[in-house]
Length: 101
Image (cartoon, rainbow, N blue to C red):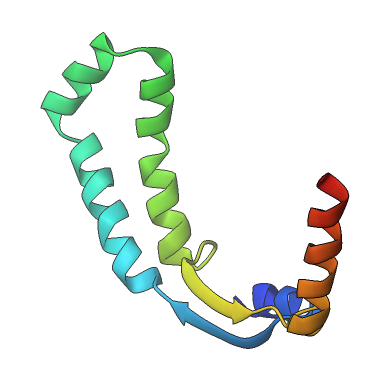
């Protein structure tokens, strides 16, 4: 997550806040992985298309990646400072409207 914060700072964002949601997300992938291992799911997958089978086959790998720290899930908020003052923005907009007519 530090990388993303650094990229946001380099992009000129202010007020950057980051929250690590990995603990909440890992429970979801644990559930998905366990569900994929059920005999009933395996029967269903035999009847499914290849795209669905490949997707479900990745659940265990994603679960391991979260458990080992290779993946993390975060939520970011930030503010991009305005490039010009509000009065300049209105002035530019007024010129654009005038050009249309």
